Length: 390
Image (cartoon, rainbow, N blue to C red):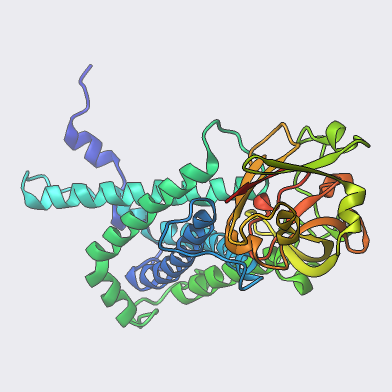
């Protein structure tokens, strides 16, 4: 039996010219690719902003203002990622025949450039799919993997944006040529029933816009009734959605203890306050958003004691950060650090009520943190201990 030769394999493989659809072409690819690049860039920048909330570089001072900033940046991050999905699929369809273009046979610099280009494209496609679809699973709060989503998502984001920059640099002459040419050519007459480049481009834009519309309601309240893709419809106990219940966090038993006391520690000083004692302190009410990494957010009326008033009971320096410990025993973020700029703000509360009612157990009873312009995972529920970092 004769083994197939390279010539046999080449003969069996399809060639770029074998794909008959003339709707493909650099004119379409350049336009869809430009829109995809814009969506990726917005997604990358807003995603990095979100990661900075977790590990803040020293040169970036984060604070409580503007109150709604994280809500809008994270909403934009999720929506730009959703918008990129149909654009990526159309972009890949438009260049699919190039997958079968054979490299130069002569081993020279042209072959090396071709191989490097194909490798960078492979990395770009793989990292793009990982970012978009792992992001989708994060929105759904389904994690079928053992690695840290946040750290891995951030690392692969740098790979994706780096390979995108390399790809744009290599293809810049082709991109310019494609954008400079009309989307349709007179000599490209197509069958009446066949899609044109213009119709495919319009379809890609429409699909991307539709995905955004059907998702945006989790951030934009007046779109909630039409946003069937939104993972949170804005509803929940006390008119606010819940990501993690007290039972799911392993905090239910301790949170319901009638002997609950909040422990406040500053150096060698310790103070314990019951919930009734917290209620007896001056109360403030502020309308603040809960904004989660999954992209959903909602405003609510919170009532409680200003955190700066609580730490003042121990004569702590006014410019002090506070480490917050929760009763939760399951999952991440049972401990969070609230920077001094938030502690000093009068809107940062040790909340006791939500929308005019006593906090429900799943919303953090007996008390929780609520601060302006903070990710939801840092709005710690079921607070049991405050450690003042003087």
